[in-house]
Image 1 (tube, helix red, strand yellow):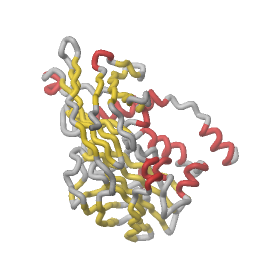
Image 2: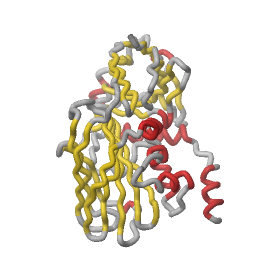
Image 3: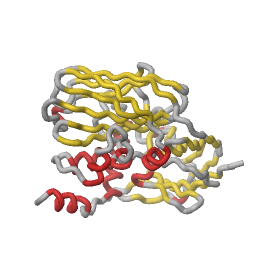
Amino acid sequence: MNKEKFNHSIDNIDIPLEKLVAREKEAMLQAKKNRKIRRTTRHSLLIACGLCMALLGSGFVSPGMAAALSNIPLIGPIYAQFSDIASDKIQQDQLTTEIEKQDSQNGLTMIVKEAVYDGGRLIVTVEYTGQKKLSLSEEMAGINYITINGQPVKPAIASTGQDEIDSKTIIEHHQFTLSNPNEYGDKIEVAVHGENLFGHKGKWNVAFPLEKVNGAIHEFYPKAKTKTTEKEYAITADKVTFSPLSTRIDLTIDYPAAMDENDTWPWFDFAVVDDKDRVFDRLKLQAGMAGDYGHHMVLVLPPMDELPHSLILKPAEINKEGYREEIKELELVVPLNNK
């Protein structure tokens, strides 16, 4: 099969996206409940990144990805290729800061290309170039992580995606939604660390200052709440934040205390509908936890230029077949007073 036919066949694959996302979220939930914290960010929490790496790891690059990668050092469309929640806004408003700092060790160069930060989210794009062929195989991947002000990032949501430009060049996309927005202030010191990367022995470090991107931030505290008739579950919308890189919804999830003790607390799967009937779910919505025991849930939607008057949250449970079953009793209308 030639390259054109291969790429066309990929485009026509019928992927059971709902079941894949459900499986990914279940894995996230189990890791959270088991308190497994890793310094490496190799495993993507976004199924899109995982699919991209799996489908393109054979060396065939789709036309869309090739076009995106060809724009280095002005990355631009790369964010769309890695399904970043703010990709359209980043491209439209040219939000990123060009960094172009590097560290070279033992035939491998780590170059931080671009970064953007709005107080609640941090995105960093890195390029690796080698004198010899680089390997994306799990055995050769090594360890890499990012710090802010010298400390490991503690995100509510995080992902890393990688893909090849050619046999000697790999692009990498990191995104973090912070557990506590604005805890680092307007100016931060970011560092990308790597150890034994892509089959090359050694340690790499690139540090750089980064300022919060210009743009309005709107915060609402609706305190809207819903609960089941038996009062077994309750959901409260504590805060909604509109920023240049996301629309963030902070929720409090209440459930029986016994679930804290035996670690069986629920991870609800959400869809969100705005006042123009736009639906945000699947790859248009990220979900994560800030803190332990699943009481503080964070939902992240794409950024919005025009603020809605309300949002409707539609929680669901994932059944044994991997499909969503909405919990109508917990559906929640979140009013936003734009005045």
